[in-house]
Image 1: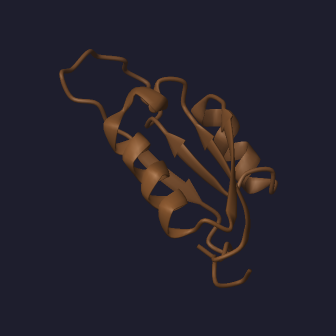
Image 2 (image 1 turned 90 degrees about the vertical axis):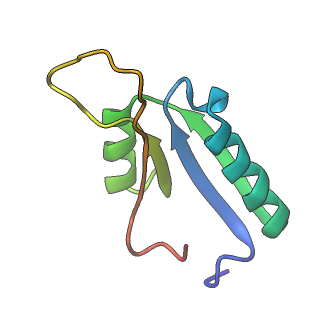
Length: 88
């Protein structure tokens, strides 16, 4: 379990992440390479994911950067974050 080959990983994600090709590919590849790891997926806003990671309710989060100025652009930015103590 400590090598990341068996167990459970609790993953948070922003609402439109399932429609992002890279997100779909990451999940597919992870499940293929780590068949004994149960992925628990939970949709939640970025700020809630950060809190959930800090208090141990999530292991990993796929977030959108928090931006005080919401300007529209043709490019989307995404990030992944996790607790540095996690086996991943």
